[in-house]
Amino acid sequence: MTAAAIYHVQTPYHALQALALAAVDGVPSQLVAVPSHPSQGILLDALSSLPNSPFDAVHRLDAVRPALRRLPQSHARRLSAVRNGRDLRRLVTEAPEPVEVRTANVQTVEGRMLVAAASAAGGRAAVIEDGLLTYEKRYVAAPPSRGVRRRLAGWSRQ
Image (cartoon, rainbow, N blue to C red; front, top):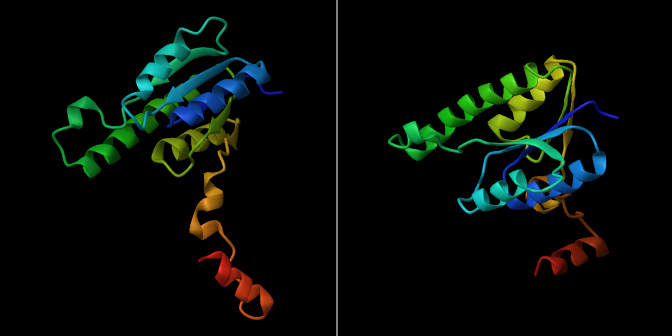
């Protein structure tokens, strides 16, 4: 069993998954959200004021920090992600004991920095799988090259 957990989420679905996992786990947990949609703030407010919440703290980081909004969107997002990553690394390194980071997205700068910080501090990392990777083309096996299976594979793509 883990001493403490930090959940990193981006979507409302990820936040609900983290809530369910934290409630079942029973270890001290924190939720870190980089909201992907403006209305997600409502859900995060509800989670932070939830009676008997499994989260000791709910941290909300801006996908684009307000001071950077005057920059082009792609630059502002990259700079914000790096600054968010530094804040998250500090959250992990200042923990009194090694933590397990549970992220819903290791493809973001924040997710990667959290995992690296946990590993460097002697903690662990886990991925909260929501099933979406199944539908990405790069993870789907190539269709068979000949025979009946090839015809069936062609039929299934129609």
